[in-house]
Length: 414
Length: 223
Image (cartoon, rainbow over all chains, first blue to last red; front, side, top):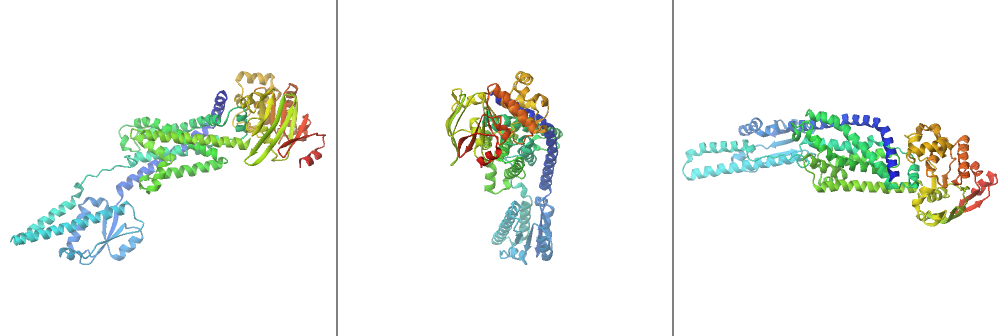
């Protein structure tokens, strides 16, 4: 153990010599990461607040009831914040649709209103969206169209039923008045449909706001890619030193132990470097994280210790990748590819809830997925036991693999 | 005999590199292992140094089979691999401190093996600024920390200028005069002048060779 401690101290001296350059690199990355987070949050906020689906209305729009309905939707209904209905000609709609300026086109067939008034259902409104728009928006629009169709059909049936009942009871003179009254009630119901139900926004990643989600993602991405900043530690020349250490009784396990602890220290130094500007930003609430509103940097200070196990796990992953790669350049490339790839799959760049099922499952299984589950749970106040187990299982697995690779390196170099 | 090696075998998968290595050495002697590239010289030395595990055989040093007691190897054997086992960012002092405690290091630099190697002249020089000779002397300095009875060197003169080679040979002569045994793999004819006995490693076994100063004859033999 004395030799292992001596080796650890020697590696620590190496790391100390590399530290100024590393801190400089850390600060540069912090500035870039900060800008990235602000951009993502700003983009997300603008996107959430400002998205309006522009829908072209073509065909027979001459009927006054229809015109009144469109005007009512655009002036009075809650949907005006999401949907912009633009009456236009077929030609204009086609051109705008091809230019991507329209989300969809609604075509009202000739004589639709007469058909509805006569109680017929032989003319259909066609809603056309481009093939690429298979997302949530299309689904929501489909639902809205269904609801509108159901409301129109059912309310029309109610009016006809009421008219028949009044006629049967010999109250024919009241039909006009009662029809208007029922129509107004139905319109009122439709226009105030936001009161029909309660909308609950769960957020991303098991209940995180967009801001906190991206904040966690950016911190994890920094940790995941911090191996690139510490790569100088892996410029170790040939395997002569490893063989020499082995000959002096310091085997692969002890070598890795000594080196890993120093590497982990470097990663933690990087994390603390990141914390300084982050604390400053959070203290002034510049990131606008709703969960931490009015609390300054205190929640982050409580959250910080939870990043240590994840930092240790990522450090073991980076250590393994550098050990497995032939040469430092290959190691850096491997770090970059694995880091970015895993980060993307596990939702560091974009909420993984929007990914296909299989992709999401893969992202969750990866070490980056275990890390994101751990950190997001930590940000909400409680980390489940399974998240701890996953993080430490990956940590132990990567260290074991690294020891095997080192033992093989010694065998080949000796 | 101080050193008795018998029947050492080593294979990589199906390729037999060492089939039957046997030789013996007296205290204070020097043996050279010669052989063409890929003949297994480095493998043999790393097996003796405990870096690789032998498939069979024995390596007795003063009555102890070191292959059965690998924990003893660092105490009695100093191994200098072909590359320099040094940390490039650190200076000579810091590299030596990995192996020596402060007091012993000072003592050895003043009047011990490290002084003989002339390491005190470049203690503060970072390894990446050292010449090949300085690195090799420092590597030997790290290897002899336990005052080993056997020093195993893998091509100690490779890529060194004549002055450096001479410095190292002087140290090895002094080491042998104090009773140490030297086993080296080499391609350098001048190194052979230091050796009492030479072996050519061919087909996995050692063949004694009497070097008479005719390098061309040796080269033909190696072919």
